[in-house]
Length: 404
Ligand SMILES: [Mn+2]
Picture: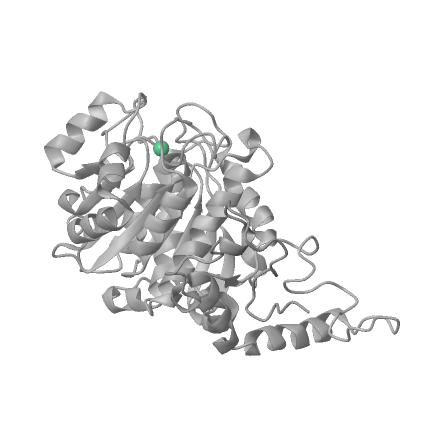
């Protein structure tokens, strides 16, 4: 009888001259499971708590009534509550608790807030439906991320604060509403995560944070567009947020880092302002040459130079338009999703004082893919903050909290 104990196929044709399966190596000599993320993540999961999940199941049974007698799984309620099933329920972001009383945001580490506003749009509208679109597709996600080995439900608390009441016919009144809403959340200690909305919201969002602190804030801005001209079409449109944000004393333009800028949709008045104000612009070509890790180092170094916090602004159109059809100014040649997510994760790993995800326009979307990437940006940033112990770090700069 032929032995197979060496793990190879047995030899039936001993002496064959050409290489056979017997002579092949099936594993690369350097292959080491213990050094690979795929295997390490299996071990990391075993270390994660499941207390939050058990609490949610118990709460779901309490709120939704115990399920039918015929069900074997006694954790299933009659009325769907919490995460499961993913296709059911009322969609807040990631099925996070909806805080009807916005004073309650103080009880959470982070608060998602929708900013349904597209009056700053200069081409395709529709981003007023961005928060709804992102919330709807967020139902796909669990709070757990395999590679990072984090479970947001176990390691942080998240709420959905609903939407800011914007005034569609008036940019300035809407900006005031947005600033007031963001400053309320930031002052409470919860990390504000804004779902836009077109990019005009960048200015009032940063203003909401900047007015709660005497400290200096840098901005890291993912975009194909430079978004720093003074006016567009005679108003403070979505092409202008960084001109106005960097007019504030504690938000210097020299701490603004703009990643992915380029193509045929960059208005020259914006380029002139970026030059004049001395911002930091890296094109996709620059980033491709540097690599993602080196780009992250440079961006962090510039944004954090003499600054106390960094705000993260993610325009979904920074990604190649093949992946994000549902946006206001689609442009080919941007980031691949995995490049953008990796860069975003490396930036969030150092801590952020706020995040905005803008320019998701569901009416132009296909299969919710643009909204899905928008959702992913928000969860990826939270995951990185948790994984690197930076969730809550922004509280250190709140020295002028507002109260309404
Ligand atoms: Mn853009």
